[in-house]
Length: 72
Image (cartoon, rainbow, N blue to C red):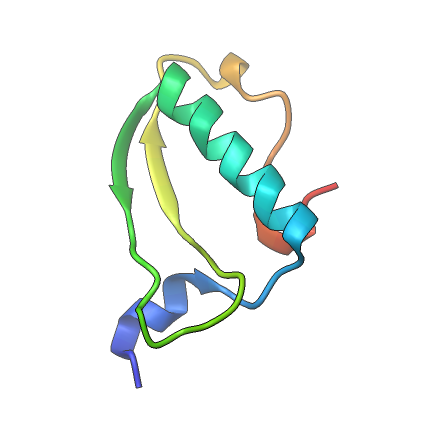
């Protein structure tokens, strides 16, 4: 239905995880340079999160890996 874009959209996720991911994106935008962020297709309803790519000066800016529903 959405072609290859769907491969980059995280499945439906809980509010608390979505909030954590959005907070992380804001942190990454402050500390690095956004290279690319996909858009959630308007046809999708719910809580979705798309892939973001950032350029950082140092990996030391990352305290932990943040990856979709696997965040702790």
